[in-house]
Length: 182
Image 1: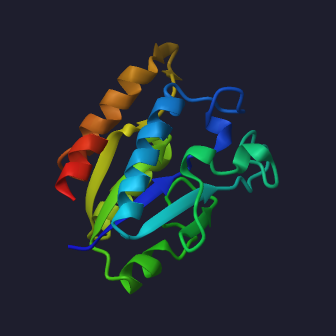
Image 2 (image 1 turned 120 degrees about the vertical axis):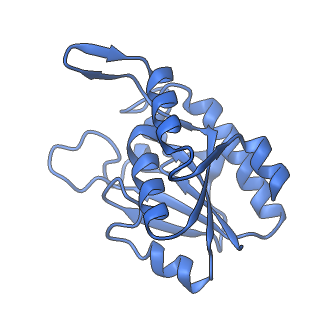
């Protein structure tokens, strides 16, 4: 099985001082950077996904702003593929699927931000498309959510989404476990 690393939306607006700061984004990006280095050293395929907001009223990932730039912890190198997306699902409106099929990729290692939105959506879509998915739980970050007047802490949001993905959609492992298995 040929693996590819998919780094999703590790962008400046998710970091301290950004327009949509996530809990734990600096630590998650360091671990994503470790995973990226592991793939680079082994010359394995790498895909960076960058979200650019194109809907009216968007407040982050605005075009041509520093907040929309990929964070320096995982800056793409020349020759690494970058897809720009406008939806939570990294496959929607991009040629990601064709790219992966063209390289005969069957296994995806996923990491990035926000766990409850773009990571969840892309992982589920990838599984539905027939990919074997492995999600690096410690290289992802999310934020506090509220519903019906109830605040759900980021740690609980993270745990709930990872628990829902683990098994039916992906193997949820740490960066260390993933690197040891490659």
